[in-house]
Image (tube, rainbow, N blue to C red):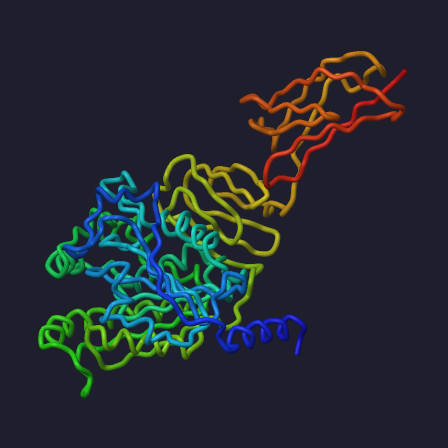
Length: 467
């Protein structure tokens, strides 16, 4: 067994050690710049009308040891509290699971930044989950690093959310699970069905059912993004399983809904297999009701939501309609929101993109480029220094001199960089320039000023010193 495999096994065995404390349910606030609670249609008359998440802390959670994390998403008529209620019974179903379980609020938002006639937001649930909630959880709780230890699962609307969010942040989520998921919604009958079933305006959220924005939020059309992700899928067929307790209304209405969702999940799985995704598909008898979803969560836990996955594949495809996001460690930002589905593709040292628009592509350390689509060029390096130019480049020892600096990145000025010369420092302005009045002393024949920006490799220059 390899050293990496032994290390992973040791972590997993440690997670299963005897608990130091009992599991605990806590509630946290999850404020957002992208979702304004005043504009959200929450479910339930007793809902506090704020963004929150219920978190199940595992046995042994003491704020020191790190644990895997499971984001467990709710359905259309539910809230952040439903999985922990008598309906979901998550503390019972997930008893003994050595993981932090995060159950966030999504109201009736479908985990998407709404189309809203082209405004693309208000609410922006997609950006809330990917850009705000995940970092908040990472700061607040002790989460194991590595995509193997990050999973997302959900029921119905939450099944759509689990597969969609995993497709948009595959570098973070190693496994995704969907229970009775709304996962292939570009069907002519869906807008009217959603309006009748849940009072939901499909086009306000996704735009026209055959449009590019709906495609960019349809998990069944984004399966190429999940090639390195493990996928668990289960769904009923619309008929009640003997011995399972469901109300007559759930059997009747939930039977019709589940029969439709069976066809959607068949489509998702067929596309995922064509994309080379590792899929565990378990179609069963059942209707759209909680007894089946509790059983589905148990099955997903037994399947192992935290099995090994590749950390950073050398080849991948990433499709999106988002203006900003992250594709396997490469952060992208379009000048204007895409007007069709954009596809990035990496193969070794090459990065290709298909679609329209101008995009900035950067690594976590700020290395990158701007380019018009389509393009085919080298992938940005992991590390790249800022460029620092100093004038004058020669100075007389002991003479007070005004040194002028210019900081650039790929030819573009860098504002807000800190320039250091001896114990003196200055910050660059909007044009990437700064100045320091300084007297060179000492016997060293050269001085080496530097430019620094958070997350970037410092840029350096040389000043030659003469008598």
